[in-house]
Image (cartoon, rainbow, N blue to C red; front, side, top):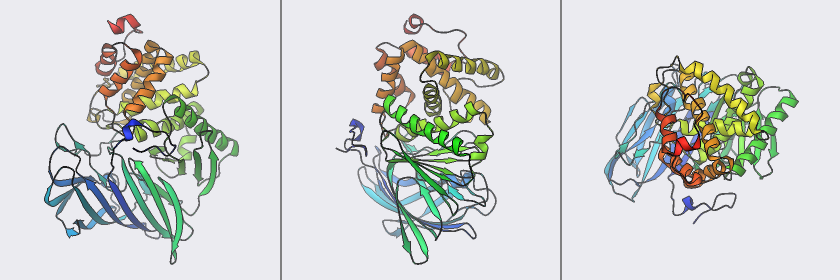
Length: 465
């Protein structure tokens, strides 16, 4: 039996093993080339023997036309050269034998790449380079469909589906570069280069950023979590301190109302990511100039929602292709609860304004049901309106139906039952019903499958009949 790093035991940890990634990356900033070696110790925990193992190479989807993307030189299976095929973001490694249930195999991938000067999830500018959704990740095996998931990278949302694993990573750079990444870090030297070693246990991905220009500040939350910011640009000290305080306070608040943050640290690294904030386990990329273009309330909501996703993406996983709302809507509403934590009437007013805006927006959308595949959305505006804001409004009404105390119990049950696992809509409904003590199927059916917004506020007796 194992425990989280904070020493709190979770039943979901019992007898759970994780696949192991060992990754070595060497970076040359003069031409933005990176050479990588990755070994994955994979155990077949599927219900069937396997003749192949699939990986997602998400970087290929947003590497642009600047000579970027992966160039794979060799792949080895248990030390023997293996056949493989690469199509867009899907890498298939063909095994020379049938991998039976419970058996382990070692897969080595050798690759090189060039990082484009772009504002994508992996990219670079004159100040830094950042690597989000960069390392090859094992695809998800669908136990119901009995096959590897082969989802493309859709143009909206965050369509990156993965399971929890352990990562041991070494990043080599010239002297003077600071590397910020997922997990605990130590810095050493190898000749004329720096080596930053990371240990990231039980996380869904590994991401990192590097720069010669980072200035570092660390604060410690009341729960003992180290919040470290790595800034590239001069920033008003008052604004910086206010932002860090919000992160500290929200992290402690979420730990109290959802469940403990199981890691030692949360790092915030400034990058040139064009959409403002990208969330990875124990790490957030933030583009400060983009955030400063927002009004104060929208900027605060974006920042705190990203902290909430450390729970409702990193700790409690979900399928971002088929059930994106599980993370988006719950994270946004939980952030709203924090922002208005001292005044339920103020929270109700905030959500009321959101509802009024949504009634206008949804009139122009073809698809307004929350439940559904990400392919139903063609642009971020419609996707966010439904998968984030309508879903958040659903959770607000759920809290009114259940009452604040029962809703709080629902969050704890949902966290407990899906800790380091992949949650589902059905599991969320069961957690809500367990906390409420009554059936909520009709409520969720109206919100998840109904078009538009419900025309009137639903009372308890309407929901439970």
